[in-house]
Length: 338
Length: 167
Length: 97
Image (cartoon, rainbow over all chains, first blue to last red; front, side):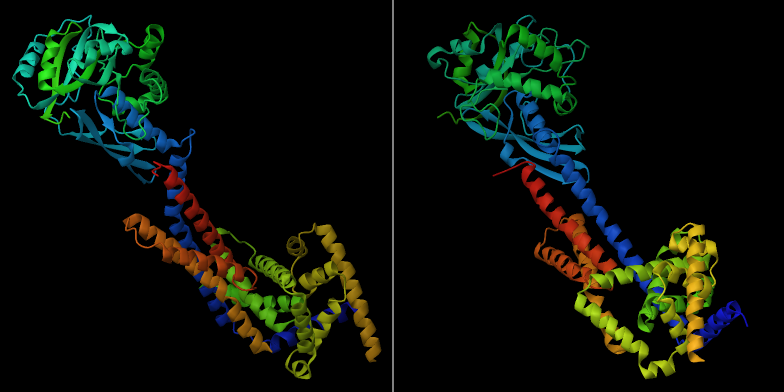
């Protein structure tokens, strides 16, 4: 017998013997393995499924927490509150009270808006803005105002501030009548328009020595588009301006540390970077920021109107003021002028 | 279940193969189970044409992973395990119970160089083709063949030696 | 000898299993909490995370069910990082002192 045959015979024999002596339960092994594999599959699939929500939340928070130097969410909060401060005369947001709710790639901003009427602040409305990523939907506004501004600004027609280059509409005559008939013992918020644009520092000339005894709350800035009340594309614009606070609400950029007209310019520049979002939140269809920024750069900040507040008797005096060309009454509240 | 029947057919081959690699019955049984566990886990993703070669491949990787894991364990334990293996492999009861001849054959195979060992185990002891063997060992077919022939020659001469001694 | 080994291998699988199960419980807790916006206590959540991480580390060194230990530990670490980042971001977004 050759080595070769021997070799194979030996292997064959020993293998057979080995297998005969091997005692394994193949059914049990397969069942156990299959069972274990099934368990593993279930556990891992479960883990993957349950990871979906945490992963999405993390991505969402990462999205809103990053981008820009302050994070996307904070940027949008700033845009929303700033745009209200500069486009809604005498209206401001208390940023400390603003609440945000973040869900999967969406954010919901909720905040109240306030007006100062007389010496006191009144809550005059609520805003609810839903964001998808960093794009806001049109805000849901609720105002508790006696004389709200039109939700959609009228075309070709200034609604409360009248630029010196425009005629004062006939209805504005009635406003003086209202002022005359508002009882004493009330405080009035009034939108006054000037005969000529003046420098911000010159507004004190309107009530020298606090006569009449009124406070300036918000200044409407001449940005070139107010003459026509339309921007270069023919869309209606609303007034733009900035507030003056005696006691600034927390975290407003107009905190009196810097000249408010400078802050105003900075804000316009910042808003221009987010003009699409800012326009959605503003009532106007267009903010025409590019046009307005250019105009201000060329002509400086000139004021053509202001929101003032004071006792009814003091507001009445404005009718004979040489600076004041027209007036529109806003809100009226009970006496708080201390 | 059709696939299970196929698995059952190869169960003994796999067991023998893993025993040939590990020289330990307990390990071999564990690894057979682990092998099937892995095949069940990965089966849906793969389209297997050659089930036997694939099973052997999985079994080989299971064995490799197992030895690697054991190496990481504390050396003392490892030494003890080795002692266990040796003693369990050579206790008298085991010799009666288990197969003496195959065990001796495997001992002899394990005296070969590692690559020769594996080639012989795959081709001569478990009848895989050269291609399948080469694939499992991740060698090209020519070097696999040369490993196999050299291993086979060495093994034959060892067998002859022993037979001469016995006679 | 064989019996001892068998028992040992059975016990060796436990940390991995504990790890993945507590990781899954942690994940489930977060899911329920987040989706229902209940805002209940955070302590069970932290407990699940700790359990999955620690038993995951133990399981990593045992021979059996390493896979579960890896998953459990992986999810555990993910949840820790997740928790830290979420706290960090929620403080920073609309920061209020």
